[in-house]
Image (cartoon, rainbow, N blue to C red; front, top):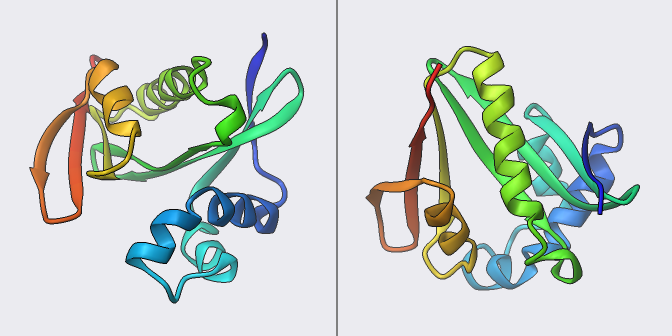
Length: 142
């Protein structure tokens, strides 16, 4: 099993991928969203395709601001979940963040998302929350 990360060359495809993967959440919390809206808010981010054995199975998006790397999006198709891909993606995000000399990795995740357990497992802690989201942070050792 070989997991690799490549900068996304097809942002439209990545947006469609994200919309399909998050459709349950969009239907519940943002019914006016579509793949074009996803593309609009993600085009300026640092976008990566996640590949498993040379097949794209996910996307990861990062945003660097001040002393932080924000993990803006981490999507893995259901058939590829629970295979360590999310953990490897977070390691890759940490490596990229350290190379950019930032001191933390942050993210926002729906409270009802099963990904919360992954983020806890790899060292993120809740820094704040609202009715729908946890804001989580993982300090990085430079």
